[in-house]
Length: 101
View 1 (tube, one colour):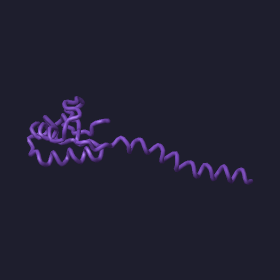
View 2 (cartoon, helix red, strand yellow):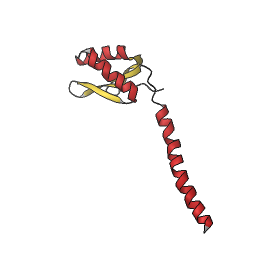
View 3 (tube, rainbow, N blue to C red):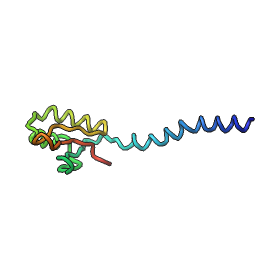
View 4 (cartoon, rainbow, N blue to C red):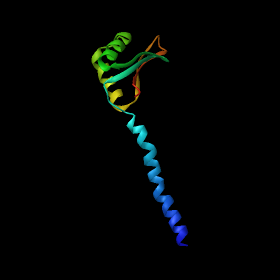
């Protein structure tokens, strides 16, 4: 009976530890470094460039003011995500992505 209780307790305690260990590498990959990538559809046109450079290029392509694009690029860099800024010819997305470390 005691062995069964120990096995169940071990499984209950080990579960959260395994989950936490598995989650750590994903969090470690988000590094706010001031660099992003810019994609036109599936093609990366700028890789590991400063936010200001990426924002200027994207603003020109999309016909937008650069200020809001800089804010969006900063958010992408901080959160490790991506965001579509506009679509060229109504179907090709212009995407700012977190650069991969």
